[in-house]
Image 1 (cartoon, rainbow, N blue to C red):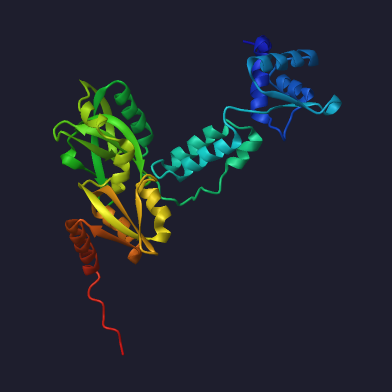
Image 2 (cartoon, rainbow, N blue to C red):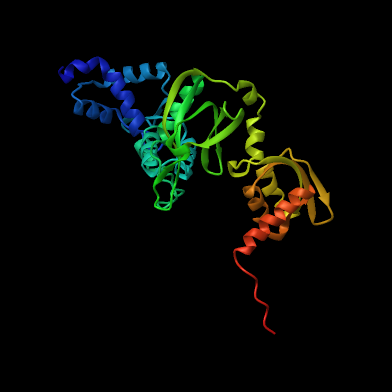
Length: 336
């Protein structure tokens, strides 16, 4: 088909040109639009350009005229995503550990197409660190899609689950046998992506690292465990579970120095009840999954944080600290 027969598509070419090349700081003239159309094999007169722009405005494209006379130009004023929103998307993709470097670059290229070529240059954000640790599992991008398909179709899924050995090779759990579960949700915790699913054999809700899953497929069997999932508040579940490590849920009492209020609210939520404890400390009572990750979170604050109840959790905390300290031997006596 000759390019001249694309004449009816002229308004679409104009729309595409304006979306790609214009913003408030970079309007284009009618002559530039005519020149672009000519490069695409489409002839146009000034009068027809005005008519096409008017039609695109009526269609809903926010085309604004700037200047007058020979300096008159046109640009796209508002888009589906504003530049600050695109920057936020780029920053999120770049800082996401579970997205590989290759997929990060591909996603950002697509995000850039939502801005003008001039604004796209501003999306090369300083947040990106070239050597940042990223997942090694390239298939995570498609794993997420397949899990969502299983959820939307109300079907169980099966998959292989692996971890890495010291040779950085994949080592499959259950000797390479497939896991079969009912997927219900995806959650992001501690920079990792997890699938929350019901395990029929164990009759309980479990979670799995999405980047450690492989060969996901949807089964014909309908999901079960809906009641168990509906009884689960995902926001509370993620807040109680440190690093998505499993363990026994306990009602604990914690004591912190006052300067840690922000850190406690970030981790335990703004609805946690804070009780002043003297001029320099406060206590909180909350439900958590007691695990090595929970102990590590508390010890991360050094002497500024303390587990004070219940007694068996305090003893478990002591055992954890002693076990870690034991790896480093006895502290030498100070010289006098």
